[in-house]
Length: 147
Image (cartoon, rainbow, N blue to C red; front, side, top):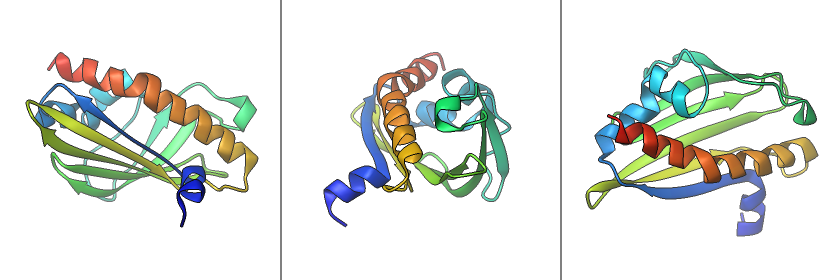
């Protein structure tokens, strides 16, 4: 697949977080901490665990405010991959990878599975890409700083 096609199917980002991987991992996997930077949830870091995120509905993209998820892969301190679905159109995966870098962590995000031919999914990709980029990485770093 060429880069242009991949750009329509995925959000791929990475950011340096000036905190050690153990703190970033906690921010990504402890439900009360995840709720502080993303959404209220009933997450458990266990492969096969099904959980939900809840937030305000987004009528412009047909989103009722509930994200249905399942933990697909887990390597403590290194990798977390979850399914991410709105129960209707979206069937995505979100993967977080952590790599030590100096005294901090390089945090990678791959949010994959957007349909390039679905206008609502492409709108969602643009909205979510902006959110991951502009606020969520900063919020993860802020939560990790408090640990």
